[in-house]
Image (cartoon, rainbow, N blue to C red; front, side):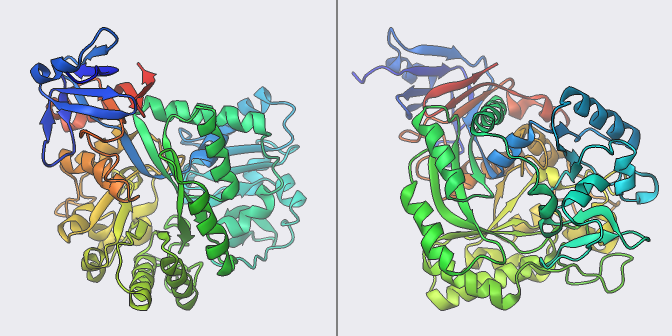
Length: 537
């Protein structure tokens, strides 16, 4: 008789994400591995005196969510600052910032995250004077939800020497000027706001770890057991490894080496490869590089093939020229590194695919699994390029606006003629591309059930437009098995299958019996990572 299981979950409606065994009633875990997936009757042999038996009562048991686009440290640190995601007016912004300032009277700098773009009438952007009217005596910087635009008050601009110096040498960045020739307070892209943000004191190690624990606890409560971090360096990787050694990690993290336009090509072999070789456990891994090809649609920094709607001659810009990106991509590919590229606009997507194609021509075909992150706008001619290149479309359902009206300004930037190819999940899937889903936390909530809800319920922005809504099974696979494939881990996680790592989540309902409109009301009641219960609701 086989040894007994440590954990046995019974009477479940299992979504296994395993094509060879798609449905089951019971799952047994011993140590950090799944040792049984099958019927309740057959699973009884794994029960013993010390087995923890959990009755799922007909609810869905599935692999733990693998969030394919995440910012673990950035999002966690931001939890210590003002949270502005629910702000919908200037008055609400003022109330939130003043309350935060009152709660932290000794903080020299004030920082806020998550602000929507269109909180002022007529689409007017915030200025330093708007922020001065809220707080003028302390430096203040607030970030748009996507962190591609920031707004600073006069005191913050003065300290950073940007008030009278409206120039930035960084590509695709802009210090927006006011009518008086001084900085207006709007800072587009990191190249513009970094001089301000670099003055903000970092939390100390104790504070940083406390905030990380808070971020990890949120992820566990949402059923997230793995994340693909989208920024990183050796220091960040070492921080996660230290938490692993202490037994404090509650999810697995894949960390790339961040490549900026000024990163020397030699750093790929020196630093990115070192991250891969130093950290390759089941919990913490390196082995990838991350580029930003362009910015975002909202601030006109996303790179488009044609003009922005109502902005003749404006097509955005890129952080990397064709030659620069191709050179870096070829070298990263030669070194066996996986490449992640933030590409929002259709021209950025095309330039990224061209670079991957150049790498394949230079180095030969291999199982590279390079990725385009976001793909918010794509030209039809590029849909069929993903599958033959083996490129993964890493996309975030919650980034898609629910409608063309309201507070989200994205649809108006590209115009109705491009709506059918915006966030084109169905077109990409039908063209044979593999989709991996994630959140981009802290840009949006890390709750994957909200992403599932958007994927299932998305509607065209105009009557007669293309539907890009997803089937439930396809959506769950994109958050599990295919997301694991997108990090070369499909043989060890992402499915409920014997021998796989014991990462799983038990939901509050039978997800296949819940109406699509109510799917975001489903929530995890139990999260297991590496065979250990990390959340119990």
